[in-house]
Amino acid sequence: MLRGYGYVPGVEMLAAMKEADRIGAQLVYGDRDVNDTLREIKSAFSSLQLMQVMTAGLPPPEIQSIMMDMANGGIESLGDNVELLKTRENARALSTYMTTVVPDVANVLIHRRDKTMAMNLHKYCGERKVVAVVGLAHVDGIEREWQAIENTRTKQPKLGS
View 1 (tube, rainbow, N blue to C red):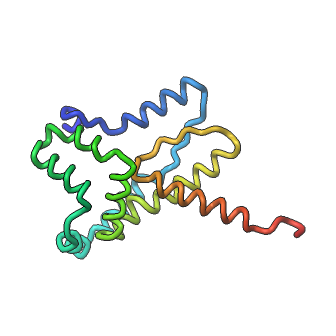
View 2: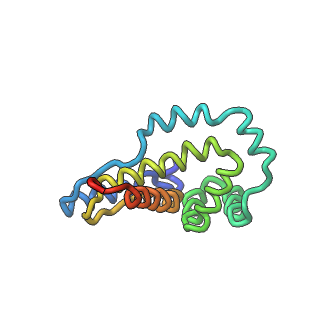
View 3: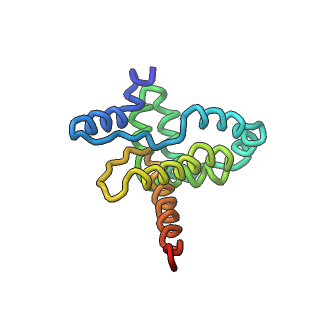
């Protein structure tokens, strides 16, 4: 149904698969297992979390504006409005809002996945060039987790020291 309204889920992954095949690159799935995430999200969505959303107040103004456009445009404008969310600033604002309002949900959907993706990228990258296809909401977190990994590596004593 969503495809009929201009929103095509998975198109980025398909493009990555085709490009990896074209250049002979290894394709690595670096995210958490989707079944683990889905199982954990069920427990994160408690009635308390829903009450927190209802009493937390409005999201940031930039997100409110896009949500109002979605509500006014109906399902027909879903694809276009999802595209409006795809700026680093909007992704950051939405992530911050979720972390504040529904921290357990944000932890499952965003923060744990950021950590897993950063660890897997670090593990598989080595000195090679790598193209990573990730959701925009994960970019800041992956960068933060990558830096934490690097900081940990540089602080570890060398053998024989």
